Length: 454
Ligand code: 2HG
Ligand code: ZN
Image (cartoon, rainbow, N blue to C red):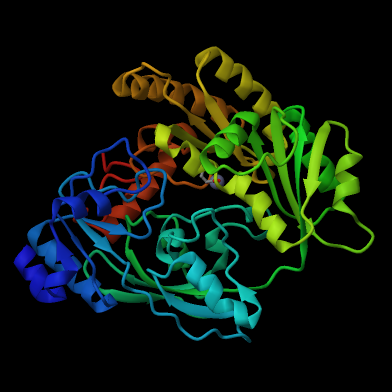
């Protein structure tokens, strides 16, 4: 099989070296050990098709692989699969400024795409802390969210067409550059967010947005999470034209300061909010924030460079926690239910994780909280994982009571599939299984991710 692969893609484009297997066989998660058969880096979509056909003949499963910044083990190959990296599919098509669209290869990093569109005063408005390394294909396969969902929505809102390779190795174009196309099922939307289980994305035609109008960014220290949520409610009712409204706890900021060496931006507090809104004449974010009860201290960026610095306190939380291998939750409830849910969450955390360090942060403007639980000193890895798995069921039951989701934006991957039925009905999961069977009858593409077939 490996000889055939090498003959197909070239000697240097396929590896089974132990260090490659570890590096390419996993994403940002660390709980499951990578154990792929090999890694292959095709140069063209036709190669991708031929590789899938080869795998089908040999009965080898395929794990499609993008920038591997995912947090749900959706790109982990732990079971002798072939890792199929889309890294070399980096073609950048011309920007169609009139149609506001561009076609790019799946391996193009998010930031490279943004730079490509900038001269046309356009952007692909999916903005992520991992934009330097996450790729367009991965962003779409996981329907990535990020820090501007409040303003622009998820990745799926910004895709027009997809080029895919099916589980039979067929290259198929789904949709095109059309902003309006009501001719039957929107199959490209089915592939978006399917985490590589239905097809492999090789290229995408993306919808682009005009560059945002100038914005103001402020970082404020608040009494608690409830004060942050009240501030958000007031901002919404005041019609603040929000682009982002983010929360992080005092503990998160301390971890970022320790990890990055950045200076303390505002007075120490239990909770912080990062607010980004459009610059409108007659509105001054600084005075608006100061006038708000519950805000202890704050700073508003004077220019673009200062705004980018303020964002670092929020965007660098994940990397600051990474060394501690935290257990991650990524839940969502309807935004209006967040204040009551947050109240119940705090009580639940105090009861189930007394004395544990828990980093809570997230996109409160989207009803999305990230809960990172750190392993207490002296507790063995296995005991920690067991305790977290048990706590997860309780947490997701609570989320379900509020009509929420156990994964707001990171996806299900291997990590959350055991709990999927808590917030998705059996009927829904049954329909997902039927689709998987129709698209991938041999179960070759990213098997075991999202749900098992039985
Ligand atoms: C973020 O919002 C990312 O920074 C990562 O979604 C969240 O590390 C996490 O739990
Ligand atoms: Zn997030």
